[in-house]
Length: 492
Image (cartoon, rainbow, N blue to C red; front, top):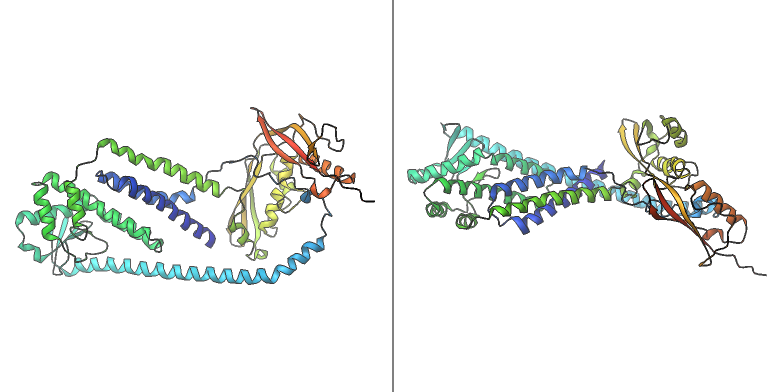
């Protein structure tokens, strides 16, 4: 779970980085402010969702099986069991030290993250509490659906939902100027800008370590001001008067962190935007870039999390003490060729068996050299490019398995090529009982490997048949099968 969250946070940050980079390069200088606001908010939402969306795509037909026919997987006795056991024992102490260090580092990272999370959450709660105190401790007057709060503190005017906060020193302004300030904050409230700020603040708590969050928050609040400035100018006396009012109220005094403020350090940029020529309507097409970006990221994460790829997460899961876990419910999906009873028999594990992720993978795909596994059912029947994946869901001390089978099309042998000492031979090699037009069969290939090794003519360590995709028809995939053989030199 910890690893999954770390991967999720990293992937979400990558999404946000890409979206904000495109925003900065292509969109930030436009004047379609409402569209820009929508772009930023959708970017955040997509950054949260896309790492969770995985499209199951069979990216390649051959990668999964590229090393399928390494003869060491099929021939026994090539290396003694003692060799592997000795090697394993010699590495045990180093592995244990590395595991302890890794676990210590993970615990430290988690502790730092939780500390930062709590600190940000505390600041957020304190800001909310400050606004509540302003509402309770200061006089207020209702004007329509808005509450006007008269502050004693010298802070820029700001709004928070339907509360508008104006310092009493602003009573010195003319009636028209004061009304413009009120109208400005009312637009903030009508546009629900405070909701945007709260949303970004909440995301900033979770991703407190991400420097992009500061830029995101600054950008969204700046756009809020641009939106309101544009609307006030449209219905007011003109750009010049409003720009003069902004300059008059310009202050370096910092407002409330969760508020949509009337003035602040971005006054110059706001005045520039007021006088800037409006972007052309056709430039709204730039916002369509969200669509290809979304598709690109979705496909990228699907590729990275392709079940064919051995991830660090699956390796680290093996370090967990699995002896306490049992296999729970086993569910098969995608199978049309074999029924559930046949698959369960080939799987060899059942509900209540000790949970072991490596063993499960081995029983499904022969990843550790198991001769009897589910994938063999398919590969012995022509389904060379079938794939079997599984996800897990832990319920107390049981792990439910959802196993998905991608069967694909059957494959036929298009051509059998034999190279002896690097030279293609036209002479038949009778030990290879495989012919063009045959359905692909892993069992037949293993039988041929053993027959070749039994002749004593060829080096058994170097018998490595390689299937290569060839022409594909509507009904079948076709593969060429290459046997590379090395003769054993006779030394008398």
